[in-house]
Length: 420
Image (cartoon, rainbow, N blue to C red; front, side, top):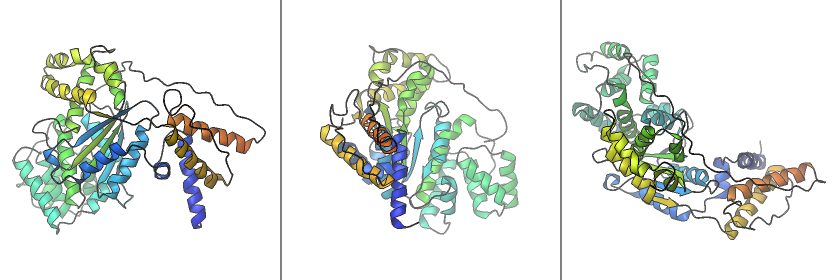
């Protein structure tokens, strides 16, 4: 494939993604980002030397179709170029925000590393160098954290096995455990016996509920221990909280507080989180004037539950951040729309070798019923029809999307087997 053919293929991949309303890396690289105030604050967090001294999270809000996912994709590029690893997590039915274990597993599954393309945890493990000062500091941290009760002893035990064992299958299972999968305690103890360390690490299986925050801390320190500056986690579609039950919403708000660095004593230095949410979420769900009035009811409901009563104050912090701490995305004006659609026109020309006509795309700006997403998809669809059917004059109709906050509580599962 020649250089020109490669660029044409990249252009076509970008157009295909935009046609489906899901900007990929190529599309974001071509179109850029028109939210400089958000990018500036994000870069400021990346550049902080002492990240534990200030909240490491930020929330952005915008209407459907205003470019939240596009922005997150752009911030991922920025983070990778600055020496961070990065994970994008779309909150969904399979990845509910209130379940840290599932969010963590998704972050590990979708992690990206600068200039590496393999499986996230495997690439991190391959980068471990027991002779480096950074790795020795990481190992010492793991040992100290286990001694002080911040981590289960299973973590230094697995790390010691991984360093010394030649059992490829066991080491692969340990990698998967670090990434969120289960691991039989008996296998760990057998591995310790193989390397002569059975007496050094004597432990019982930790409670399943204790493992997600421990895995998060361990993975973050591992990332720094192999030479990266930290971990950027991008949380998309946070508004899905609105479809949860009241207890699940409360737990989700508490998780927002955790990710935003607002829980006293719960520190994750080097973790930077950006979350995206619809701009009507706080008024519709949290406000006393909204549909569900969570400001009035959530904390009290959590504090009535023996299992979750300790989360009430953290849920309050999470709600405060969603109500008061979101950075509003700038609504693109006519000039922004014109520039974007003209860039898109040139991209389409490269992709298909066909000269698309100019579009009067700026009429009505990019606000209600004329959002940037609508402008982009309408232009692509019309060019498609004109290219394939030159005698046809297309007309685009737009239907407004409204976020639904109907409750659809998921099922929670617990496990009692002897695995971690």
